[in-house]
Every structure is written in C-alpha cells, then in structure tokens.
Image (tube, rainbow, N blue to C red; front, side):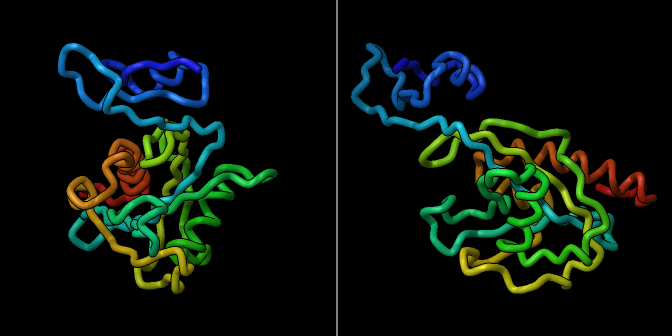
Length: 196
C-alpha cells in the first residue's frame, strides 16, 4: 500500500501516484510533517453516474434540480447531484436516468434531451471514498411535472449556479460548473440566446 500526502496533488495525481485502493491524506502541513492527524480514504474502483435536470426560466436563468438525502450518511446535508452506482450490464446514461427517477421523481415524458456533461468523468472526494463520477444533463419541459422522489430523498430544490456554489456539496462544484456549460450550449441551440 502506498501513502502520499494530498499537498500539491490533484485527485487524479493521487490516483496515479498510489496505484492502490487507499491513500493517506495529510490534514496538517505544519513542519515537521507528521502523520498524526491522518485518515484513510478509499479509492473505489466502481463508478457513479448522476443526472442534473434543468430548465431555462422566463428570466433567462438556468435552474437545476438537486437533492438532499434523507440520511446524511449518504452524501451529507448539502444539496447534491442525484447519483448512484452503475449496476452490472447498465450504461452510465441508464444509471443516471434511473437515479433521476428514484431520487428526483424525474418523468421521462418530461425530458426533452439527455446529454453527457462534457463527457465528465472526474474523481470526486466524498466523505468516505474517492470515486469516479459521470454527469448527464436533462433539459425538461415543466419544472412542476415531477413525481414524488424515492424515500432516500429528504427534499429537492431548484437552484441557479451561484446558489449551488453557495449551498451545494463542495466536492461536486466543479462537476456542476462543467455540466452548466453544456446546459448553456443546449439552451443556445434551442434559441434561448439570452441564457445566463
């Protein structure tokens, strides 16, 4: 098992540096370097896939739907992308749609398009593990036409990008920002040229 500090390395760099399933993360950088305040973070070999439904409001603002788990053990108390593990035989897109239906109440009859978020496959550092995650965006017709989410969802909220940046799960901010640029491209292609 290899151990490295988090200092100066991205999570991709950490993954390349370890070639193992576990990394040791240095919490304190005060000299001399010590390993006292350490915790183990598992690098999971499995991948997750998520979905962000969105619409463009009359004011030109893109609003995205996020969820908070009913049990904070699964992702914490902040708003986050509806996501889940990719089951055997399932594609990343199929997983994203399934998670949207379960965790957000997404109706496929309410979806105009589902598009891969800039082919986002990024390492995300969760509370318990580092995992790969791919995000899809889904342009929807009616923001009110959603079913009741699965019991795993505490509540859902429509947010603009700045609102997510202040209220959303920090580990997912980069993914949401990258997916947002895809939403802007879709909205512009649909003739909503004043999208912000």
